[in-house]
Length: 473
Ligand SMILES: Nc1ncnc2c1ncn2[C@@H]1O[C@H](COP(=O)(O)OP(=O)(O)OP(=O)(O)O)[C@@H](O)[C@H]1O
Ligand SMILES: CC(=O)C(=O)O
Ligand SMILES: [K+]
Ligand SMILES: [Mg+2]
Image (cartoon, rainbow, N blue to C red; front, top):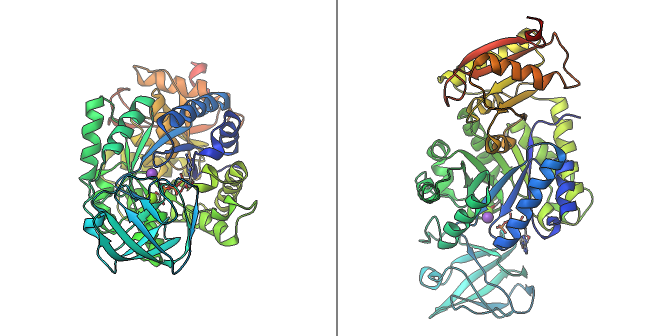
């Protein structure tokens, strides 16, 4: 069964072995997410290598997304394992550097005691536990538990109505970013983006390292929802990070933010991921709820490029089964309907106009595939946003670009050597496609390319190409 929307899997303790990672790739993982909120650099380097090995073994591209923690306040570590904070209990959250106990635990933001006051509500672990500040003494914040639940190492702390002054990129984020770039990550995600300017800090460090990679804005703050359009313009893509978004703002607003973010990204031909709790109950169970199956299907029908698994694959009991279940839900939904909301504007760029025409021509003449030659991936993303039912085949000599395109809807990638002339491009298509079981000589494909080859942004060529015709000359 063919599947077009992509699957992002968060790697973690449940998926750190070679066998598990190969299992994820075989079940349909298109992009692996390394979550720098958890795990050591050593852990990330080890799974990174395993992802690359699994991709080679499977004979296809798999992207690697490095997700930076961003300015999230977290609890510190506990000396003695997880604890239960019951409703009505009191506890202390301190900016002192201590190994926590049930009664007193540290937090990562040292100025927190100065920025909260009695009556403020703090939400822990995406709102699973709620506490209210009753007093502040020196570095200690005394809290009353208003909604009890488990607390454990490094759980996030949200302050929905307090504007805290944490910088967009912490020292840890800067170090993690340098590490991820050197490691070879294909995409970077920045958490808790508040302004389009936040990308500048990322670019500064990338330029110091001499490695530019595309950056996703994680939309999980009310400030980002307000500035959504400029953020989509400034960044290279978006993740709708519903976990934090649903505690930072009223959770009933999340569904419409999701739809608006997906549409804005498609207008700009930038990939968009819908993330968090998609098949949450599969952390524990072998079958998802009907509501979760519908959530995955509806994200696909909204037009998302990719859907993401978090705890389901990082710490869940059934990581591989969760991926195959998600793949089945997507493929079945798409076999019933590929229609997504219409784009609201007529394309104005050369690439936008050519790709839109290419897709119409391909449909009208019964072509078997859309083919894009692209140096940067831009032409491919402009084709992807159309959600055309024809296979979308991307040819690019850059392995990093191939990996990056694994986040874009419906894209299959092909490795081609760099060529100098347009004629050679068409020969490459012939050579690569004759071997595919669903294509035969005489089939037409529609090719969009730039000329001369190797000039980024030069998309100017649209050709109806008959497979096998070249060799008859
Ligand atoms: N490497 C790890 N070591 C220990 N626990 C982990 C690790 N990775 C994840 N976890 C646990 O599994 C939970 C889900 O992991 P995941 O990486 O999917 O987090 P998330 O909810 O997307 O992100 P965050 O915790 O940053 O909000 C985490 O909250 C954490 O408790
Ligand atoms: C993925 C993430 O960061 C969130 O949902 O909050
Ligand atoms: K993160
Ligand atoms: Mg988050």
